[in-house]
Image 1 (tube, helix red, strand yellow):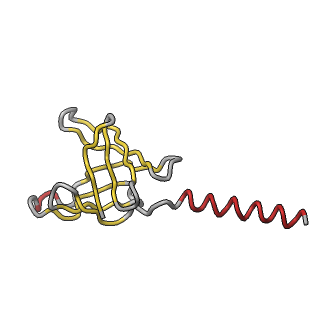
Image 2 (cartoon, rainbow, N blue to C red):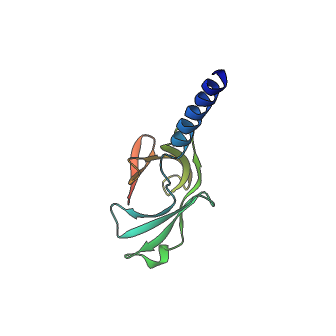
Image 3 (cartoon, rainbow, N blue to C red):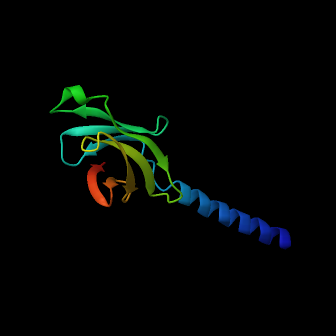
Length: 116
């Protein structure tokens, strides 16, 4: 009986930990919410690049975010985004909202929204 109880506890704990870690797979192509552009999230490279852009073909392939890293919160990532104002990369937060929307924020202000 004790073995069954221990095994059941381990099984339940592992099921919940797998669900917490795999909230959403954000890799792949996302649509820019305000421009006719698509961005590609490549988790192997830890970056987001321009996949297509109807208004600016020269932008294709440019890195939009780099150093994309998950946090302990399954819906939150950190990254760096180039700021023309600062002429450097700044730390941003990427939040997944329902697996079909990503919001990029800098200093608490939304600066980019991606949708699927």
